[in-house]
Image (cartoon, rainbow, N blue to C red):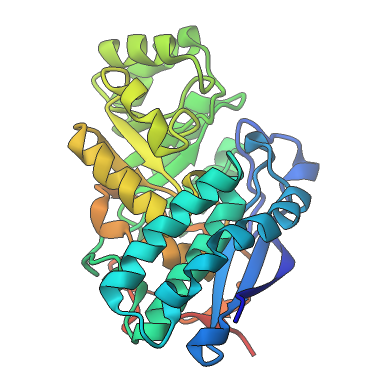
Length: 360
């Protein structure tokens, strides 16, 4: 029997305004948009699986492109249904089929990472439920993952400092920069928070900007600098990394595993996100390859519900730094089951699949 896929679009307000250097218009930052998919397999006794994709217009995706592409992606993976979840399948066979599904989606259409992510997460949830194990065990990975930081968007320095004080129990804060008052903002945060600060300019600086602010970042105890320049300015990234005592981490420059070789010798680290690279399996492979190439590994997220965050956390053991707080930025999460420990580590579920369910 064929796999069947349905989807629904969620628009959820943020707890606080969330602005980054690429979206400083307040009208664009009041809520997130995410696409949740439900996958059913006829050969798996009616098991229902869930996935999520966050369409980011920066990467050319919208909810409309996702919903247009999903049927094509589903058709590409349908021939693998028996091996993924059929009665004669085995866990090794299903694991192999998950890799083949990623290859099939990549062959069906280029780019469209969020759409591929939604289906890939659902396929991993399906396999986990089929064999009665959580997704990290499907991947053969540990449940021991680093704690997450907490992200604060661009705003007036006093407001950013207030939010930093509220989040002071997190072991690190990620502060969005690239606005009009970067140094003032960081100084205000440092007055309210004593722990490690990670900064992310989301392509909002020039090389001159970075050189000017770098001494202040060092003095204020910043731990790393994420994506200071536009994605293809690898020359500027390499120049800054050579001059900086802080690690530079590529995000918008590191979309898929194919980008990694070109970043060797350019930056110290890479930020891997499921919605960019295409899901759980691609993220695990990208993180593994990044480690092989000597990169420091950062596991990030979009502003996703617990579906996307639970899926991301399943590969957390492959990362040095973790930034999985997307669901914590939302005013309401339509899913439950993912728990954050007092140490700010996500507790990976022992339930089959992702271990999350819709709130009732």
